[in-house]
Length: 113
Image 1 (tube, rainbow, N blue to C red):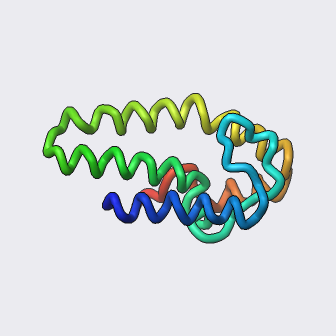
Image 2: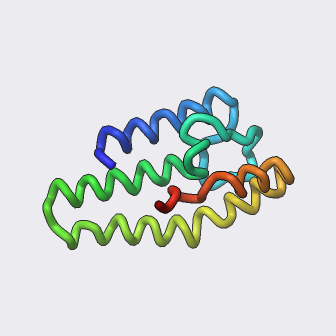
């Protein structure tokens, strides 16, 4: 993923949240007022985090250093284990079956293969 693609993903996802009138604050997922599942959210449940990870990987590639991939790996690990689970719990609580159906068809990160 290029830096431009990553920035585009972040911007488009943020715009979708704003257009739907829901919060973009990751620390307050319980404030979500809409389940956004279109645009980049049809490809990944977390396009903003995918975009951020893409920027970190693009930076590592630009530097040409395998060590520069460590921040990207750490970011993905922390977001996947610390940030996303409470968000998913809040979405399940707020949107019930609609969220579970979305969760079953769209991956947390990206599709494999």
